[in-house]
Length: 130
Image 1 (cartoon, rainbow, N blue to C red):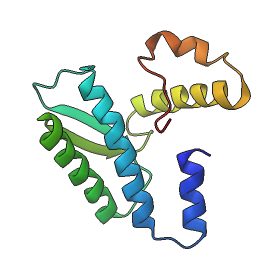
Image 2: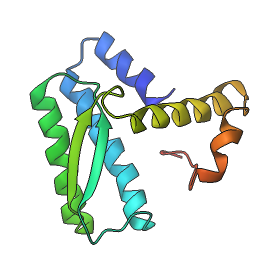
Image 3: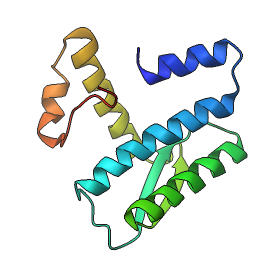
Image 4: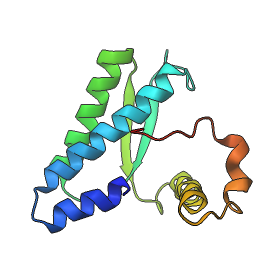
């Protein structure tokens, strides 16, 4: 069961939306930690991080920003500038959506046709929680 399905079930069972948000904060932090640890981006300058806007609640978006900024600074001494935009505002998010979908199709439907287009650009493909 992927995280989005898991999160949807929690929301459908009446759980607090902030739990969903904190779970996504945690997962995003794990992914950023892997990027910083592997030195895939230069960490000696401010990094612009653009997240896809999925939440309209200003408090939850600010919580997301503050959590990730604090974790990056405290753990890796990295300064993050976080922007939350829709895919129509930031075209690179459309590319990210396509790549995510291609990886999903490879694993879920054993259809690697789209994955094969981007596989040379993928740095690491491992389960988040083995």
